[in-house]
Image (cartoon, rainbow, N blue to C red; front, top):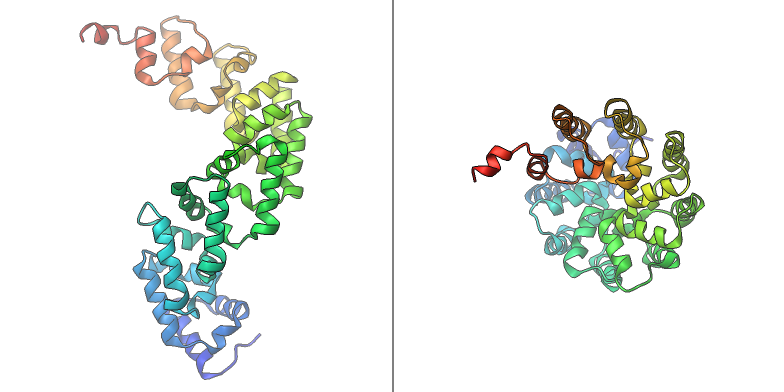
Length: 335
């Protein structure tokens, strides 16, 4: 599609070319925002310069504008400034507002009264502490684009349906994982919860999981959870053992098999000479770094011919570990 040859669109063409946009991206932006054909160079330039004053680096502006070209035609004082000023009141760090706009520039096109205020009120009604409301939105600014009535209310209903209806619990879940509000109940959250129950998690297990590690509910069953579950079964874990692993350390179902689970289990069995069953008593085994913790601590213990459980070996900081196994005896006695 050719861009119209009107005076305004011609000015905007030069505006974009002066800022390094290539022809293909310019064509796409004109298709996205018809108002660009009638836009004034002065307004676009004013909005562009304002975005720089709030901490957005100029090198990032082309990407931001290409995502939401409408930014250049919005009234600066009528639309953009009010939203930015409201977002600033929610921020705790200087760069948070600029970061949020970079993630989801369409937030500047939203109405403070019609979108932002109702969203903040919705979160507070769910028990999200006032200080955390801003954190949620700035971390996942796309939230402002979701319908409260049709999308978010459905997710709240789903979470309440799995036993999380007590005051404030859903709010705590949203604080831990603001991105959960963007998923489909029918396509993602419900299938995941049904899979977790099918492998043996009780309703109470599912509630604990949702509260401690809510992001697991939004993982794809077939692409992520099933392969990890099958891998654990192939390692020798069965039934309730896998449930205990998942409840004890939920990321075990989403961590990379190749880069995380497999190297640790291989080291446990082949190098440490231990049985995989030992992980049942300490599921957080998978949390610890392989080279920086497992390898070094095993080496220390082997050199001194010391035996201990995985939790004794790993569930402490460096100083306590060395004191516990007498590696700092001289230091301890001299103090």
